[in-house]
Length: 355
Image (tube, rainbow, N blue to C red; front, top):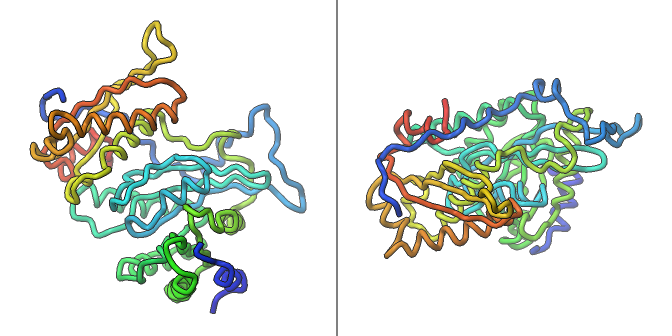
């Protein structure tokens, strides 16, 4: 049976090209997921040392919420919508997210750190195995889990498998989130809410639309309600702790994913080799990046006829990077081949995917 808050949600949800050698260069190690206890031990207050808002009656809350689900269920889009700005790349291609992205939601009464994770799936490569392992380790380090299931799709074996996995989190509350409600009728959303509620004993069930911004505040309220009392974990105004060079690499990969064939997205990786302000031109940042693929045929696709597609990727990526960094950008892109890098431990390490 649905809780009263969920029933109200059901009733209110309307429709709402340089040739180079075939080995990738080393990249910086991705920072591991910060443990809750370790983060709280080194907590940072807002600038000026001011204590967070709160009172004895309404204490300040802070903590971590992890969004999980099958690939392409809208986790990254939802993360961006909750944070209020783009911190994670999005694509209609499954398995776009390859690392845990932290987005920070600042409120007068709380600070919510959202962890966007790769989609859980049956791994077919060493990369897939490492991504699944990353998600599972993240689940043990958060205060609340958001289980995302899209409204338009029937509940499938993948959702049921993940629901069983989440049932094992005895000490962590799980909020079921029905995403993409803007793509379904009110009746369909109601059906999905009932179907999802039957998958497990969830702390809450909430329908949302990141695109239409439907019930985003309500979802944030629900997630915050499961956080412990504590001071802010990040300085006021900080929206993510992703290094700039990593975010730049992700924006390039997002541009490269647009319009490519079905078999290619998983084979694309991007590493920023060098980034810095040009000497004598402080308003211009030079970015030198490598786009890696696994085969010569894929390289030809990424470059396109007479380099047209790579040029288009560079144009779209540069616009996003300039918006991110607030500066003019000179972007230098090259395509390299790292044969079967998804299955090669050496390549995975050098591209930033660690055990």
